[in-house]
Image (cartoon, rainbow, N blue to C red; front, side):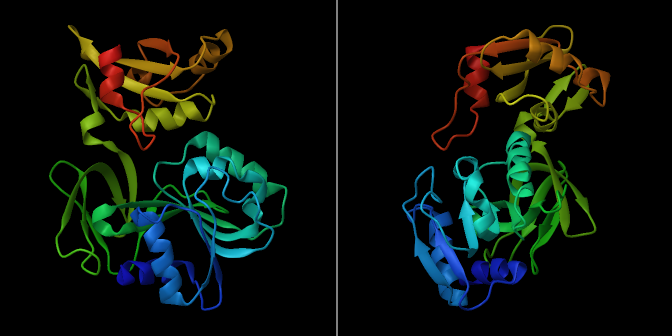
Length: 283
């Protein structure tokens, strides 16, 4: 845990006497690691209840904080108080990225915001991707972390400082410059439509730039194509939304959904992630 803390603190250049804010539950690794980083770098640690609005009473500048996307969504008016913010627990949607950019554009804050990549086995994250001020496409792995691909095209992580084993993931990636990688999607989510492999997460990110709703691309069984690409949208069926989808320039012709389905509520797992298996069963 100390080795993991050192990697994060070095990457963000956190120093002794910096102030950090803990607003995540300490029964989870994310909260525990905020404490370890503070011990390691001798930072002053402010404790806030792990609520959906953790910055509600914040009136001072802090050097470092970790939050979930939902906490960030509810704290846009106070983000300028934070110098270094890392967001983890779930991917950051295109819609939230836009809101963050708009919120900080109005202030002259020197805020840096990063999306994290990691898992329990790596004791929090092993790579960061900057969202503000520069919107990066690729995660950058920490020093002493090696990233490669296996025969499936999935990310393999060798981080000897935090785990003695090479970690195999189910995350399909593209690797650049040896230590940078771009997440393409989960191998178990890949849709095979008419022989073409489609990464739903990439298409979802594209659609979320145009509409604020939660969206999911799924492959439903089809006699001719094997799997038929459908787009599921959470919320009321509106003509304006369908028009916006129709105006999107998809890279490939087969990326355009064969059908658009509206649903009141998309099922989610206990930690808030979309439950694709249950959604498929519902459809």
